[in-house]
Structures are given as C-alpha cells and as structure tokens.
Length: 44
Length: 280
Image 1: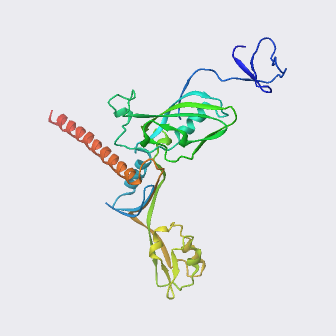
Image 2: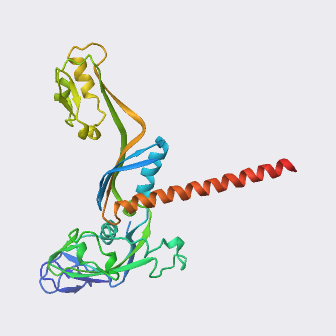
C-alpha cells in the first residue's frame, strides 16, 4: 500500500511492504500520515 | 413612524417603534438578521493539520468566528469592481500557524488588516496535543445572513407588541395578580392593584395576572386586562460585535428603503406598459 505510516508505539516512520508490522518494535497498529497536499475548503 | 430608544449600546439596543404595521415590523426584524452584510471567513487553505479535528469541521468553526467589520472599507464581492474575483476591497486574509500542546484561540489568527480582527480573542478553535500542528490561511468576505448564518450580525433580534394593562374599579386589591406576575410589573396600591410604569415594557403578555384574578373569585371577567397596542412594538436587538447595533439598524432600514424603491420602479414600468397597450 502506498503512503507513509507511523507506528503507534515507537512513533517511527514506517513503509508498509508485505506485512503490516513495524520493523522496529513489531507493533501491528500503524497510523497513516497526512498527505503533503494543500486543501482548499469552504467554511460552511 | 417614531423610534424611541430606551437603551442603545455598542452591542445591544432596546427601542419602541411606533406607527408601523405588523408586516413592516417583521420585515425590519428580518432585514436586521439577514440583509445586513458582515465579514466572515469563507475560504480556508489548510497547509498542515495534524490535530484531532477534521479539516471540514475546523473550517466550519473558523467561519463562525465574528469579525469586526467596517462597511466603508469592504464591499460585497458581487458589487466589487473585480467582479468577485478577489481584491483587497472585497476580502481580507488571516494566517494561523500553531504547534501544540496548546489551545488554539481566535486571537491566534493574524489578520492582514488589523481593523478586521476577530471580535473576541478567546474563542477556542481547537486543542493541539504534543507534536500536533496547524498551519492555514483563511479568507474573509462580506456576505449576508440569508446566505449563511455565519454572516448574521445579530445574536438576538425580536420584537413584541407594547402591552396595555387596564385595572378597572372592580379590583378589590387582593394582590393575587401581583404575586402571580413573573416580571414584577404590578404592585399593591390603595385598595387596588397598580402597574409600575418603569416595568411596563417587561410585560410578557402571558396574562397570568388575568387568570389569577379570576381564581380570586372576581367573576367570569377579570378586573385586570392585558391587551396589545397595535402599531407599537418593543424591539430588542443584540449584535455579535461585528457591527455596532446602530449601524445594523441603519443598514436594515436602508435596505428596506432600497427594496421599496426598486419595487415602485417595477410597478411604474408595468403601469407604464399597460397604458401603452391601451393606447394602441
């Protein structure tokens, strides 16, 4: 899956390959990081 | 038409409007709420938001922050020379760049025009925790309350009929109406209840005094009668701080005048057209 993730336990940046697992601490819960794009919204 | 102010401050006004119809009073109220333009944030460009709130919720909250408005400086985008494309005469910009942990307040918005700052500095926008960041740019434009409630300059805007209270000679001064009145506008007089003149305008027209009088055994008709005076209204207007209340009242009346003028012009055109057809 494309996009960078962050480990919920050790807070390291993780790239998901085959397994959904942090290579540093082995934790399986990862948060997807916010994309770099700028967002334009209406304040309504 | 007469207006008599009993209270006129920057954010609150209480006045009596006389000599107008029900329809005009309602139109006036509606004009104050939804036809007076004011500044509010409309466009938000979010560069970074790692807070717990969604971007859309954050933008919605920013839109509801009241902003001080100078109607001589800004114009409605539809009436601007740029045609609504955007120029310093029709919009102003705010920047916000904060890193947690902290609470982000409306005072953290940095305006390009210092005169168009948020009315209150301590409106909480959101809370940032450790390592959370918020970087955005917001654009405020003039708009009217009829398009979105964020552009409403009033918080509370209402009116009621002027009360008329008559106490006839059958009143035996039992004091039941005095005890019952929730606004304390009655007092015991010499063998008869009387109205306290300074508190007359506080009357809710609830008629609890009439019911209490009938319960006292006066008969089928109460000795105290509460009526509404036609063509006389008590207005209570409270602004959110974006515009002084006197300016809200003035702009609303100008709008009503302009609407009436354009309606008369249209009627004249129709009348002129009808007479042309008859002559042919």
